[in-house]
Image 1: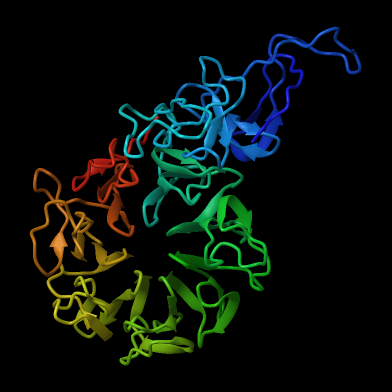
Image 2: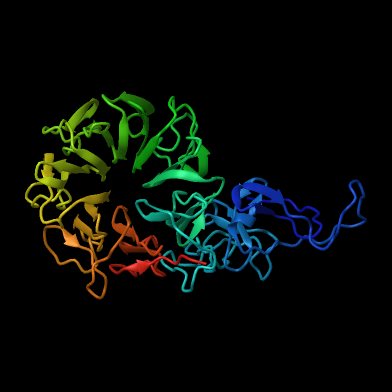
Length: 485
């Protein structure tokens, strides 16, 4: 995009104030003191670019840019392979040049010709520490190929794949190794991620961003296919108490009402449950909920038994199935399978149903569909604290901190050291000691855990730097995210 020449008095930019990412103020011109309004200068001071050290400083005409490693801002430009172009006045030959397609905002950026043919590689990542990072973590959210943590101020810091704007930075980019804060989003109390994200704040407002191909961010006519920054969702017709998202579907619940939008016909649909919703889980085209009293009800597409009603219907079913009448405390959904934590007469169990082509339900591989819930065998004794389901793998967190995963391990998402073969495996570190965690999350083909000492470790696929590792080829190993000030 072109920009006309204008008169600038020194450096002008926008910055955050009060530590709040949604509050902005103009930075006064540097070194000019107070300028009287209405005084006309005889000549313009030569425009100069504003050096940046934080993406939050790169805002131009309301458009969010990105702070590149060279120390200058870039802004969205679809003519560039990487989707970003340095501001026209950046020095050292960078002005107006496209940012390399493989560049990251923390220092791997470089200019290329202004024709938009970036000279960088899409697999290159930063090779040094992240300068800007969350000091503490209070929560973990994992998407298909990216991850986020909540810090002590309930701000989201995200890293990994950003080709669909799922990091919420106001721009798209191939991959970001270093965590960065989402823009235009205040303190949140809940977030969920897949190829897009939705978050709920303390006032129960819902914001979504990222892939909107199926209307899973915004189903209204005229909505963009990629939403690069959080937008508040309108017409929910309820005050959400919980929410969850899948690859092409979003759902929010309050009381006995569940409102879903996206790949169930795109327009938003409201479904009523028989009791108030306590936990909500959303897959690619289905959703399940734990209700007050411990029952589980599911709705949506049932091509692979993901509704758990015993007979795959192969169609959208807006009348709920009921896999459990009681005993369930937590439910989670993968792409086309689901699992629940259930208390039975024999004690706590993990039971799964749906697609089992990679053993993600815990059944032998010669059982490609599990139409009714089955117990996952060979788990450490319960009780259990949490579930995390990816595209074709599943994980459980025991209350003693041990993590076990099963299903597809093609990228090491079950565990880098997990032996080949069917069944659940305890995640162990390189010294063969069990990983002890307080929270887990699963992406499409990677897994992350948050530990009690405020650390985050990820393993599995790193094609979009979702492990926080320096190279997309650095995979099938544990990588610790750089956190702490």
